[in-house]
Length: 111
View 1 (spheres, one colour):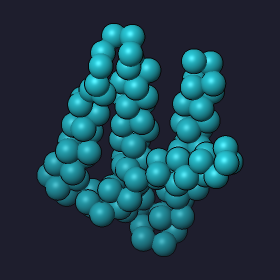
View 2 (view 1 turned 135 degrees about the vertical axis):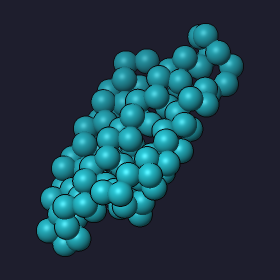
View 3 (view 1 turned 90 degrees about the vertical axis):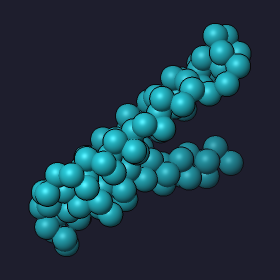
């Protein structure tokens, strides 16, 4: 279980680093509105990852399946990005998906 918690922490740190690199890059290339959307998406991606890891850590101990609460995060993100005029949907979704490169990097490092 200790190895799982270390992996969880590494994933959260790697996702945060990816967001810290992506948000200024988007600000320089696409502007502040897209940068704000990317930041919101990255925050939602981190929240999704935390909720998913919490659900996975309960497997076998308290539950037999992964919870579905984390699935609300991208839905709320898209709804928010479509309703708030200062936000853009595509940069928000790309920011949300920043946890994926962190997963790939960790998989390559562990291989």
